[in-house]
Length: 338
Image 1 (tube, rainbow, N blue to C red):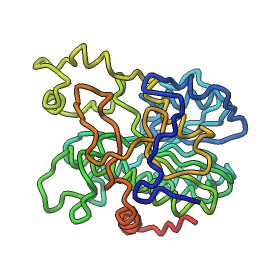
Image 2: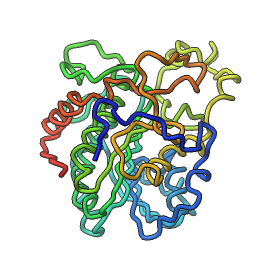
Image 3: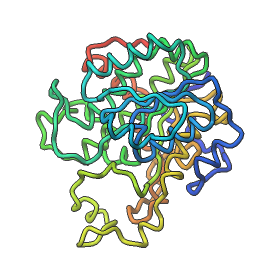
Image 4: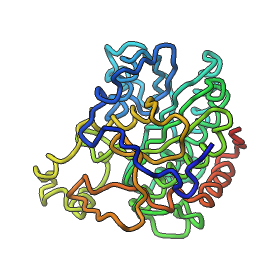
């Protein structure tokens, strides 16, 4: 079975979908009855749309939530869901969530590592780890490791890491991942955490495929109506040319952004599409496998459709193996994944 070491499988499949495809388009004809799904951050933005879509297709969906009150409010009226407490910045809460899940569920068919933070000021968890790395990668690495027995038993599980085009902002900095000896730059912190999402998928797929577990990463697109950038300084958006001096998004930029139904489409497609049977480790976008970006794609932040492709460093085999070992060390947990 092939894997995506060094981008070997990064070739679009001509899925028939595109940037305007919605969750309703990609879920057509797919029945998830009898399947169990976990979606982190599944109570806001594209995570909420992902949960609604998978639950409507028959899946039983578990939503781990840091803000239980908000989760209950946002998921009101959605059938087939269970809300449980979990905070990705708190290792003990991840363990507690996983232990409770394993005590009540035998199998886990789909794990969508969707939750994330973006462009925050410097914050550290109790271990001293930078918050974007801790939340976006290390918390999900730990969660996946703890849920591994249930993923293996599913005999065909998928792990989906919601990454971002933001991985192009920075490779993973193995010398100083927590900004201990370098000045903090939030875009660099975010970029390396998203690169980590991609590298984690590459190595997890490499190790897990013999157990029937395949892993993927994806860019949901530039989406209007999420709260992901809620604490980001407006100056960053203005610097990228998307917002005016008053902090308002330019109408011509807003018109090109995806809505949440379109933004969640790639997550749903990656989690369920039969086109991905037999392959894994790939980075996807617009409900298809993305192209490898070797400098051949011109990117403009005020033209969201140009924000595509995966950098070679984000699917590099040596970096994927190295990050795996570092992640085990950072969370003090062995995760053989086989």
